[in-house]
Length: 152
Image (cartoon, rainbow, N blue to C red; front, side):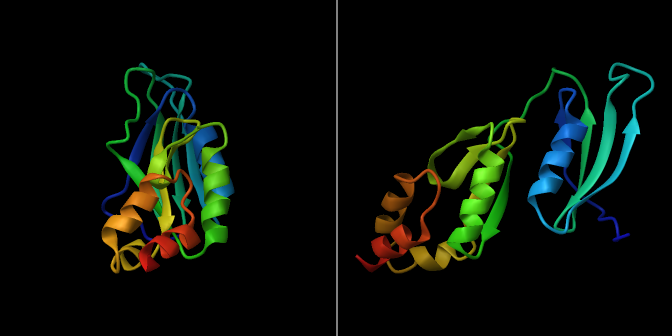
């Protein structure tokens, strides 16, 4: 078992914490469900607390009920090395969710993700305005399109 970090994200779901954890683990390699514990009492009775790892990053989730939901004020970044990786994560994370501009999407659980090139700042360096304009016109990011914009 890997070492537990002092700090890790803990996500509030409306009755779908285990489903969400299984969905995320199915997408990211080197991921696993660590534990699922039934909630036996209190307002979330019948739900679960879930611990899972995505690429070695520990997450927690709880079936907390409908009183809170995710907003884009918090998102997770998937920094991809290749267009194939962007295509892979974009297709899977957006399945059942909503795509948005600039590499952002909201998954079927309402959680926001940014699927971006790992070297985005390097791509932008030669022509930040042109690359930003191209980026704003994209939903799923096209690395070749960004590089074209950078080269003028």
